[in-house]
Image (cartoon, rainbow, N blue to C red; front, side, top):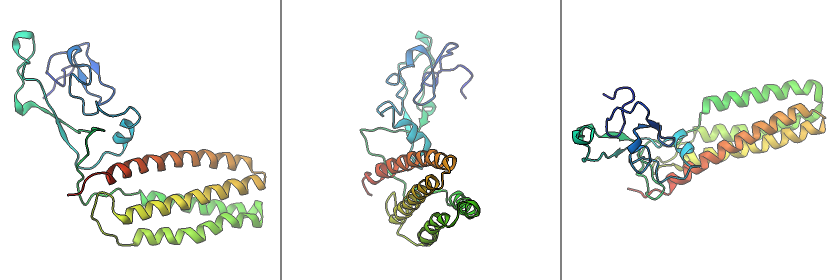
Length: 226
C-alpha cells in the first residue's frame, strides 16, 4: 500500500515530490517527467486528455511498467512484478481495443426533464409573447416524438458504437439545434433579449458537449473490429 508522499513509480519517499498534470500521479524528482514514469497519457495531445478523462472507454486498462534497476543501493526499493501499478493506458499512436456491449449512451432521463422544462417555459411564454410563441412549441411537436421513437428503437449491438446510438445522437443534436435557433430568433422578434442571451450561452455549451461526444464516437469507430 502506498504511503503518503511515496513515489507512485519507485516507492521512494518523496516529501517534495511532483504531481503529473496528465495522469495526476505523484512522483519523485527522478520520475516526474511523463517519459520517466511511463505516463499512460504521455503520447496524447494536450487538448484530447481532458476529453478522454471525461469519457473514459469502458474496460480500457494497461500497465505502467516500473524499472527493475530500482534497488536499495541507490536509495530506492526493489520493485517486483506484483507491485506494478495498473493504470488506464491511452495513446494517440495506438488503437484502443473496444469492449463490446458497452455503447456510448446519453443521459436520457436528464434530457427528457430538460425538454419538459423547455416546453413549460414555452407555454408560459404564450401569456406575454402572443401567438409567435407557438413556433418553438411546434418544434417540440415535430421532433420530440421522433426522439422518443429513437430511444425505444432496437438496434444491433455489434461494434463499439451501435447504429442505434448514432441515430439517437443525431436526432438529439438536430432537435436541440433547431429548437435553440428558433427560440433565439423568436426572442429577438419579441424583444426578449434576456432570454435570447441565455439561450445563446446554453447553446454554446451544448455545441461544445456535442463536439466532445463526436470526438469520442469517432475514436471508437476507428477501432479495428474483432
